[in-house]
Length: 377
View (cartoon, one colour):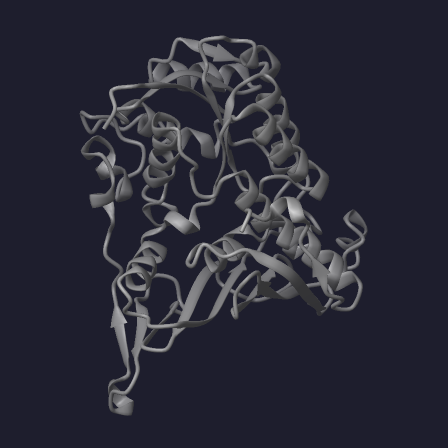
């Protein structure tokens, strides 16, 4: 690996704190600054992790010439404008999901990356989770055979969440289920059709003029015979938290467990009927990472001496994906190559959800993804 190092700043330190020690341990990264509006919490984190540069102002951080790239972990409504500001300031961008909340913001981010040559990556956890990486390995080894259909869900009870969450249309935050169905074959969504189902409580509806309890989207892939189905719910649906991804192939299929913590189920064609399904614990994929950050696939935020940092230890969430995300972004910058998902791919994934909700409001009308979300082929 190259000895080049990239100077990173993390913006937003709730979920973002999980990434601090990973960047600090990555052999090709320097974590030079962190940013949060709350100065007390900012200093608490910066002191604990020995970070000198601290910013309560995002705009001031972007003026720092030492910073090569920002990793944005702020609330959803800020993602688009903060990514745009960073690119205009000459910084590479990694941003937690979704890319933005409007098609126009997605288009501007894509335009800026093309104009400047800067790198953008949406940090979608599911496409680097161990379960997804296991299915990807089966696919790349030919064990699935011909992929015939993909399906994913993201169901969560968001009652009690603050700010912009109450009444949020289900598909406006759909990347955790759209991401994996497109990522497995590196496919692109060409058009979508979505139906709303059920009705949320009256007091929730006016926030976004969206009545639906569940939204279900069919995605037609571009230049492919594939389609996928994704569904989401956020309010007034009885369901344990679930981010699921399933793939159906001609030789093998893999289904997500119905209950969190249970194993995947692998179905193998042409076996005697009772032997077709087999429960499978997904292996870990730390082997794909530099040794310095491999342990972060199974542990939370620990330093090298195994000393817990205050209240930041959060265990291994998101399927061990965090160090994979960091490595994909840093490695892309060091090797001057596109990460997955890059700006266009991130826009394609994000716009599926935005346009799917529009489709649901129009009774399932087919809506085409904009051309700026397509790679040239």
